[in-house]
Length: 236
Image (cartoon, rainbow, N blue to C red; front, side, top):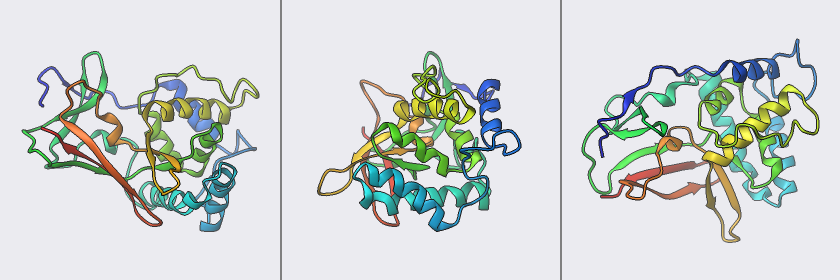
């Protein structure tokens, strides 16, 4: 459904406070301890970081998929040409556009009539998460531009202090905010015969607003050793 009231995006920059926290967290000259990876980690380092979190939550069998998602994110944002605001701009020919929706903020609206069953978006996650307080530590496996992109998503609990109430340092303030972003936006799924739960952070996929009469719905994701994707299809 097209929304005539939706307006084009004007400002896609980070708020000053979030930009400052991000810069400080990733600046080794300022912040010398508990840093995220300052440069692309070796595959073994990435797997070790993620394994510590997933194994502690009994989700070790998802570790390879989580490491692959993180590696793909490094490929896109560091080795490739993806920039943090790319997901806010629809590709040429896409059946949607990103707009400012009165009363709801940024969101997806149809750019043309949708056909029933049409694939509107196929999206791959920045990262996979396990459902526990420790899951926010997984974000430290990602490069700075990917974190920048996440900070552009809506956060229903911007004043969360789950980490910084213990020790108020830049990394903890960043994790506080990212935990709020994840709680607000993560897509939850059961991905194996044991019903292991996993959360996926999608960027463009998070911009579909909730509705009592939706015209798109989400179909079952595919989470495998080397393939992680999620899709939204027209539901007319």
